[in-house]
Length: 582
Image 1: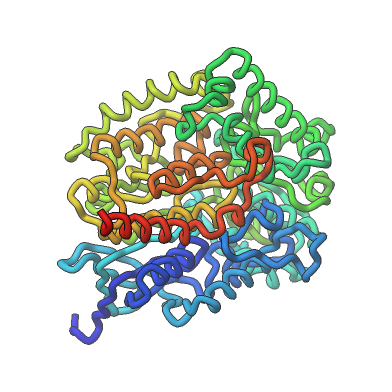
Image 2: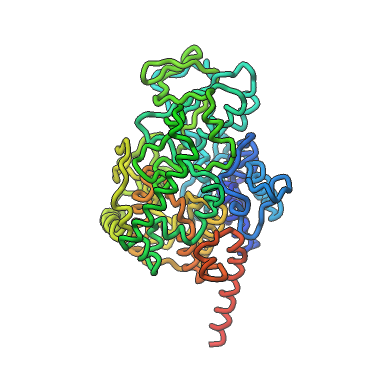
């Protein structure tokens, strides 16, 4: 490699979505002279909300005011303050303007796929697909998210190319092609939220849709109505402090309300009744018992589907969503596609289905593929094997930390402190819930590689891996904490304490969110306890409401945390002055 092709920087950030952009802005705010670059495989900012991935009817599952950074409000749709929707176009435009306002665009290297990240004497060496360039960086922030690498399974019987196959990631780019009148019969495969969105979009386009969902998987996801009883916004309620007590979290196991709701018989009955009610309301709203094909979309869990979120959770934001899915143009088929030949799909049952297009909503691959197995094991990242789990998780290999002992203790502690989770629901298929199959992130505070921290190596953080209802806010808070860690401005506890925290999280998320917790650091209803823990590390007050009633019942919005970085910096300056006086 010629020296001219090696670019040396102080900081490299992989990803220009929610997390990558705010991490870049925060790093430069704290260290303005930093030589920093952002690397993204897409042609625009936005990640999942990049321009090429947008299509009509793409709407976020939150209302206006809950999906933005703390210091930057999002403008309403078409300037109409009564329209509380957050559309895909609004999100992309918001992130584009954020990048422009903070002079980040000139630092972004678009259309660049990081294929390798290896250690080098100065930190990390990055290599790229379709390029001989190399970047060497002292600090590396990986903010790729979990929807950057599409996964399409190999069909056992093969594919002859007679039917266009489109991954849900490319639905926006393929929208014009799908409008062709020659495409009338479309097959959608998968049961993730992206499948629901694709089916809705295709039905509104006048297509006939056959929706194929595996009969032996996690099944259809649970879906909340946008408004509960037509008056309470579901995500706003999920953003209240009250929800942190109704949703048992390992990050919230102290205080009177914790004991009242999670450690008393009456409290546990109230928690159970609340989720039974919410699940019932959601089922009525969906119309699972209306006597048509939508019955096939009923979550395959015996109770409280919207609580366990076993196969994921969605929120209806469009008023005609369920009426559209009840259309006679939709057929739901519980099977699998085995082959595609001569414009016909053959299913596992032997039945055939004609198709003009095939939409694959089949999930995501290894978004940490830039690291080899050895580095993954050291960083604490899980292995990937297509759509199957691996029993030989690199993060579980023996090292300086004896994870088996920590994991066993964590399992007992979760069941003791959160007895509501000790009695899981009955599922149609339970094979995926084997604890040995869990993909375990060995990351302290979901960001810091524990094995590296134990060696005093502060060259790498993994960002944006927490699945929650308020992504931008959590990304902003986590990024600030992680950057302070990289800069050596905050200390971390002993290796034993960090290992305990990591094992507790993994044990909790697996019990709390079942199949989703097996796969991801899932924390859907639990973003406030996470922010509480990070703010406690920073010495900041995360209880931002003006009185106890508001603190418990008023939804937390990103704007409630506006100025938290200034608060930290002010506190730090005062601490230094006090030290000099002494």
